[in-house]
Structure formats: C-alpha cells, structure tokens
Length: 124
Image (cartoon, rainbow, N blue to C red):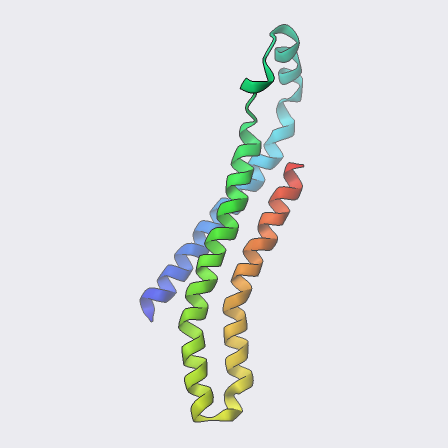
C-alpha cells in the first residue's frame, strides 16, 4: 500500500511540475514578437522550417499532464476499489464512504484533463 501511495505522490508531483512548465512556456510565447518580426522581415524563412518551441512544449506538457494524471488515477482506483468492495461486502452501510474514496481517485484524472485544457487555451 505504501508503494502505491508513493507512486501516486510522485505522479502528482510530475504532473504539477509539467503544468507549471507548460504555463510558463505558453506565457513566454508572446514576449519575443518584436524580435521575431525583425528576423522574419530581414531573412526569408520557408514555412517548412519554422518551429514554434513554446507551442511544442505546451502541447507536450498538456499531453503529459493528461497521461500522467490518468495513470495516477488508475493507480488510486486500483488500490481503492477492491478495498471498497470488500468493505461493502462486510457492511452494506459503508457504501457511501467507499464510493467517495473511489470517486476521489477518479477525480485525479479529471484534474489532469482540466489542467491540460487550461494549458491548451493559453497556447491559442
């Protein structure tokens, strides 16, 4: 049980770090507009070779936030659901409490999805 909790905490820490990094990359996109327009005006750049680094980092951060939060939610539900079923089979009055614990594990994945939507909305 302790290893599952450590994995869950580690995945939440990674998701939080990626979210901060993705938000920073998305907000840093608009700072170099003057130097970018001067560079494109003086040099011709083919559209095939243009790279938007902050957009790429933001997309990777959004994908990792969703993916790692989904993994963390899966680990939490995998640990909580069997315990909830066992508790419910012994005492049917514990159904409400056990349902809350399973729903808390599932909400981790939803938080990752919300954070990735927030990152993607900053990129556009």
